[in-house]
Length: 372
Image (cartoon, rainbow, N blue to C red; front, side, top):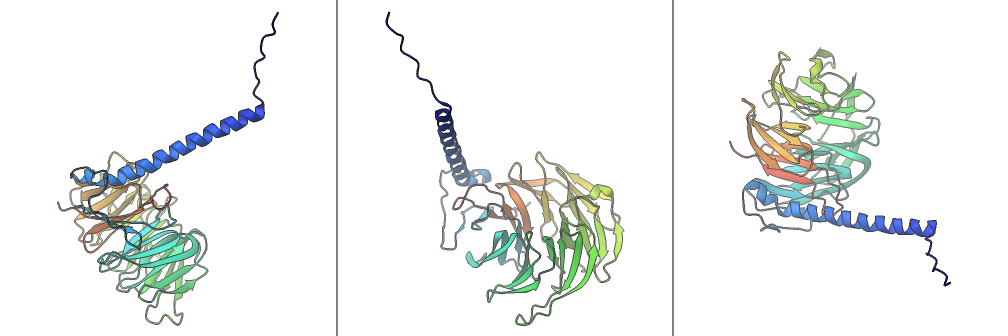
């Protein structure tokens, strides 16, 4: 009888090699799909605004400063903060001509009129929180990985350290007159600083007082008299700016990692994991609740106070509501908003979360706030 041919046995090592090879192919296919979806979404931004869909934008400028813009009724600018898949902070200058964005170890400043990148500043302090100094071509920034606070002169590109003992920064904001900086850090403190912007060659900045309280977000009332702090662990609190004393604590329902205040100082907004709540500052009573089909993670008021804008990082949209009635006016397409700011010129900027590497990581969008 003839011997039956033996079946070839695959060794365990060969099986590991084959499995690794298959996994590598699947990962490559998955990455290619992500890149395609990212390009497809960028090409179809126009579809969200009622114009004819195109696989490539009709008008695109890719300049040396790595900024993109599309000819679109509402979407005015698209920017890239290099090496930052997540833009943790955006802010406009007082006149609305400059946009500041903070990413990972990097701070960028653009001139919105010329589309020019004015500053591309590298840091070593992690995710950056940025805020312009009111009335000045300067800004302050701080990171979440060290205890530094720095100020930066945009006109001269000169940086000066304010302090190396500020704690890991979670939020910063200025008083309307630009004389005082308020910072919140992970050591459960709120610090009030006197900031000099006249003589950058000498350090005259000083810490005025320290408040012991957890805070994830800070705002200053338009009259410059009070600080509002919010936290996931604590209620919204109202502090006297001059004395640093607690004036009152608001309802426990106001616990929130983000807070925004209206330009007239009469209302403020908090967000939980899903909804946004509008509160009367004087009485502390709930005015209305804003609810959409996705979670509202961040809010900002238009500078004229007529509209409230919110970002949904799950569905990738920006909501625009009427501030008086709470009626939704518009829904703008975004990617994954992670931070939000409005300008005096009627713009809204959103930093984006994006997991596609450069050059595809469009992570700052600037929209014109639509009319009613």
